[in-house]
Image 1 (spheres, chains in turn yellow, brown):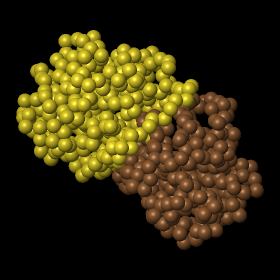
Image 2 (tube, rainbow over the protein chains, first blue to last red):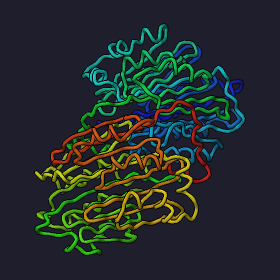
Image 3 (spheres, each protein chain N blue to C red):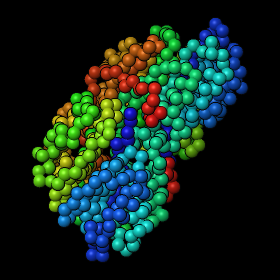
Image 4 (cartoon, chains in turn cyan, orange):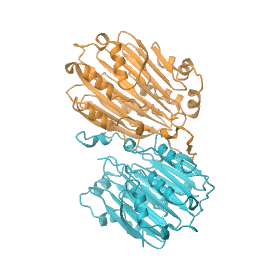
Length: 320
Length: 320
């Protein structure tokens, strides 16, 4: 069974002197926004700075001045962004960014990145980039081009791990596995001390976690099945510094690190990422919206020939 | 402008004591077969062993006992295979294999590999494998499982080069470039002495070449545009031994080598492929139809950060 773990991601900043997304927007609005991309709210946690919704496909975080939404599978996230743009006064929207990882079952997607940008372009003008090679892991980034400048301390990260070790995949696909066991596996207590945690184990497998503390957020989404396993992390915490721990747990065949506004990204990556991983793609740019975006893809060289993956022709292969 | 260079490929072996594809099948039949996947025959060459058709999307080679067809773009090659199966008596069809490289604009495809196998399964039973990681370059291979055994000397190769050097891309996208200049660029006289050559320069760019000599064949297909360049080679000649020359000409960021029935594949690759290339995936298996299939993907490690690729939002981005 294959599932498209790769996320689409949108962040919208509002003029918080006019509009507080935490105080002025109802949960019903967020529910409707999430439904626009065919996802559902499963649960939520909150503190005075942030409300975090766990979704049937990934996560939504809402702060006073912005929201961040990640969705995977065949959700059409751009429809949720359109819903926001249509229902909030244009003068209150300060900035829109929209991002999409290359997919591996893109024939199953309802729209392509190009389609999505075409839709957004009806409402706003912007620029778009591909970080990473066409024929390798890459991220498409679109940002509104309206003079908005990101705060230098608005620093966030992504760590996207592909094809985790057989042991990790086996453990995470164990029938009836509890959320507690998965938190132990990821050493959540160690990684996220004093965070409020909300998590969910999907049936027959799959796992999502949201965590918040003050303005900080951390989210994990796990697609564990062997042959197409994928685990994503996104956070305001420094995932480069955490990478060694995470990589040691998952032992992925390859992974991406993305940094937004970490000016020391390259130096930190050099220190943090060691053999057997080798950098395959390194891309960076200071965008016109003030975000300094860095993308690094790492792979493990192979020296021995392994067997191919045999496809099951009895049922699910049409998902390929 | 993006074009899906990645090929689908089918090979069908017939019982040549009953049926000679060269003598008993008309060009009209091949034309109809090719039209089933929305391609057209542009031209052809032939000798006593082989007839080679240059197609609007890649190539068709016909021998007495088999045909091989490669098509790229959004062609639905499986429909051509279905046409053959429907129009030739089942007792005359000895073996069908069907192969598909992972695509990069698969949302534009009319069917997925899974869909294709589902269609073929109405007519024959088989097995399917993925050579290469899900999250990296990979090839899907389906073969009929009917006791057929390939001849050990039925040895063929593929070399698939991704993201060729800026210089190569620039030269190959030169307006009004002649076929002669492209043959010079690829050192065709040197690579293919005494071959009959048929080639075509597409408008505004793109190039295809078929070459035959005795039972040997060689074909090149070039998608040269910067940002998504791709050049494929397929031949009965030893492309591993030729790889160093070809790689030196194109300097691709990454490439795949595939071997069918070359038992010395691994050793030869070790000798032929040198720095800066590093093996990312190595996969091999002796299939139940007797073919020993080897797949090797090579990448170039990066040490410096480059700029992202800026997308043109005025027109063609919806192709992404």
